[in-house]
Length: 99
Image 1 (cartoon, rainbow, N blue to C red):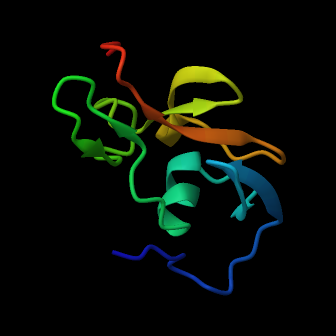
Image 2 (image 1 turned 180 degrees about the vertical axis):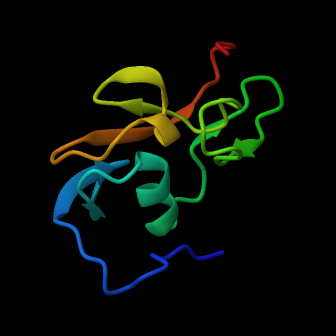
Image 3 (image 1 turned 90 degrees about the vertical axis):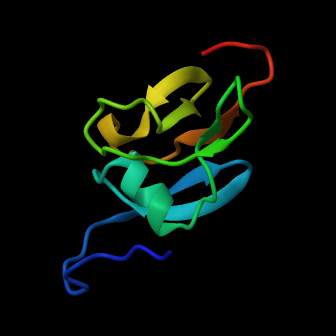
């Protein structure tokens, strides 16, 4: 599945963010969840019980499926976080039983 802006002519400042060690361009101020979906990130976190890979579901902060590690902070909801230059994002792949 590929995500793209509805109106391609709408522009915003592109800023660099680092995702799992790779620098990608994202639109400044857009939600982090949307930026990562547009960059085709294959999963945001893994379920600590089943190990299933998870992606955003509700896009409004109710389901907690978009949890990431942002600038070293765990459990950041990507749908409630705005892109800003220089962010460092890592998928939250938990094998320590934390939920």
